Image (cartoon, rainbow, N blue to C red; front, side):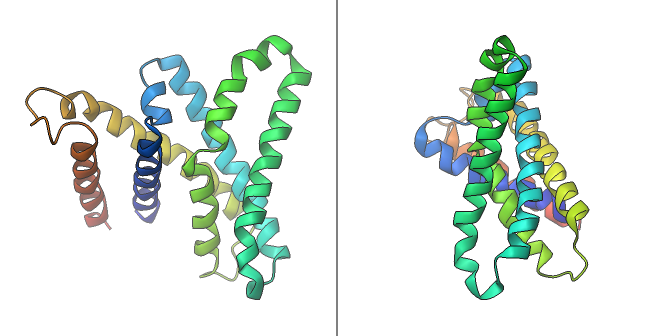
Length: 189
């Protein structure tokens, strides 16, 4: 259940940050099932590879210099971003043009950086938290983020309906809904 509560927290952070920018990547992508599947898969790939990179960063950066972690984690995500664009361009120009939007939207999603920090904090409590644990946590984070987005997508239409007061409609109602879902998930522990 720790996994689910962490994913709901990541989703909340992502919604709060992206609302300030005016859009939420997965909610916009959810309008088209093909886009949603592509972005969901890409976010899962980025969270998995990002946490795998975090394993090496955590081994290299000494604990007394943990202020370097943010820079190193962002650098790892940037390397994965550039490498994925380069590899897709080598494979096929047509496939590259089709997928580059998903990579742009997914690489700099709050779920990716959030999962990297969460796995770092989780690894501090275990002496034997290995490479496979980091990779599996990243995969779980990506899948969980997508499942949480599906839960929000299902409620989005009702939370924006005319039955909800105008001042509460949309984002405020979504935050309350996320809070209620988070409490329900947390009670399952």
